[in-house]
Length: 301
Ligand code: AMP
Picture: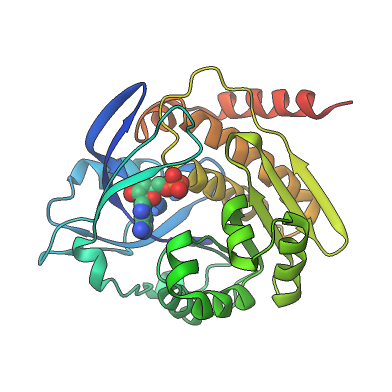
């Protein structure tokens, strides 16, 4: 049974960082998120690719137990492509080019067997499509929403509508300040909770993440990573591992959400150690547990 559905982009990324470059490498928010979730549960992807999307990428996801039945192969166009680069401040991706290709006409359609899923991750896509997906899922236990500054600038009202309909909102610190027009993350978090979500998680790049709930607060540390090569997909790996962990546990409790944030931070920190999904491909459950324990030690005082 499909218990976790991830909706978002599958992409071919061209990325340059101070430590190397890749061309047309496997990427996309739904790719990173579902792969990361697969360490904890059995996710399914809803997305679209063109005929140029290499079969081996779909096989890679299948080998990890990710259901790809919800990925539409659209013969009429090309796969979504993103080109970007990072300078020494690797917290900020600079976009060079975005080629939407088949993603421009993407209308997410959940296969029947996905509609009973209890956990849903709406990765960064048009808020209208995110709303449409929510309408297709019958009785979700936990919905997690991500977005980006483009939608804050261009579809603010629709975005606020989706925010009102989800359980947990993910934003980075810049987006939170921008959306609620305040320099204070505490005020931005309070504004989100007033709209409807039970929790908001504010990501602070390599410096960790903050969780705000009704009357509660948790702060996850950043991992002191020595070898960062490419942070592309860290936000999505974080989200994927987080919701994957919760789906695996069948929980929506804050106690488990706090652990889920640490698992998200663990997988995201590994993801930054290499380009594309290369580090995740070599990742084992034992690696994850070991770094989780390190996080526990960092947190202790
Ligand atoms: P992040 O986790 O924020 O680093 O996400 C990186 C991934 O998002 C890359 O693999 C890109 O292919 C994908 N991406 C970049 N721009 C967009 C966009 N406008 N819509 C959907 N996905 C995108």
